Picture 1 (tube, helix red, strand yellow):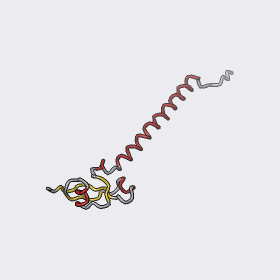
Picture 2: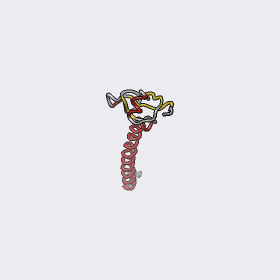
Picture 3: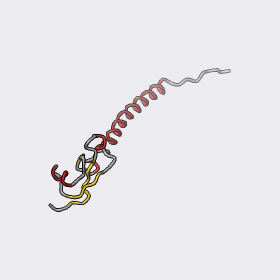
Picture 4: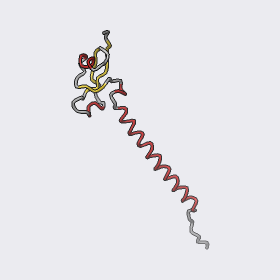
Length: 97
């Protein structure tokens, strides 16, 4: 009776270790990039806003150097994290001026 134990070759162990290291490096690289993408997508400017202000009143925004028009608040942006300037103002209807 032949009772030879089956063993895993050293080559298989080395290849598995290298694959595991590559997988960890890829997760680290893409994990960081995905977090950056999430932060950038919450940015007021990346969503078409002109900036974070206390009010989206046209007079306030024109005084800050923006185009005259009707502005509205865009919720869910990074402006909500800034405290007093908690509105991301987006130009809805431009007016002449």
